[in-house]
Length: 39
Length: 131
Image (cartoon, rainbow over all chains, first blue to last red; front, side, top):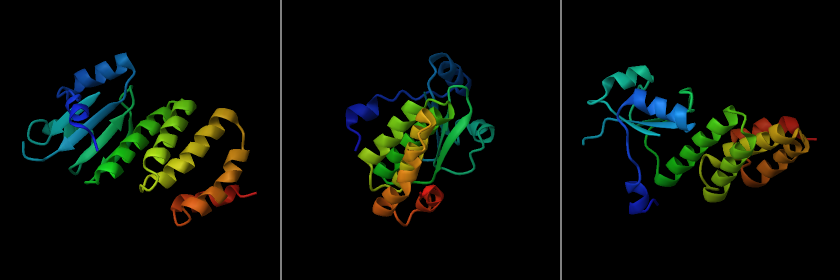
């Protein structure tokens, strides 16, 4: 199980173009979470 | 790089990345090429194993064989009873072969599969390598 600290470390981005640009610069993969869950 | 795509807030992302169902998780490589997709709910450990498989695939497709092997090994060590484990064992062996050109590792896989995951489709795929 993830600890509360681990789950809180995720800073979700909402701008796809910015995320892709940052991924390219930092050479990191992108994880996209597609959801329809109620907020 | 975690990107949130909620159907009400970012409907265009569903079309852009071909997401046809929720929940879905798509993993892109740093160049934006899709390398792995998880569709549907999974228990926590199965989901974590799948995430690791996705990162392993990113490394594999970038020909970073050492990282790929490490990530597939991590799946086997941390989630040995997950549904992803047999596939991880297969690609771990392939990653090692790619890194070393040592084909003996592939020849050892059929027996490993018979011992650990005999009913997996990945076991069938390794039978061609039996010496």
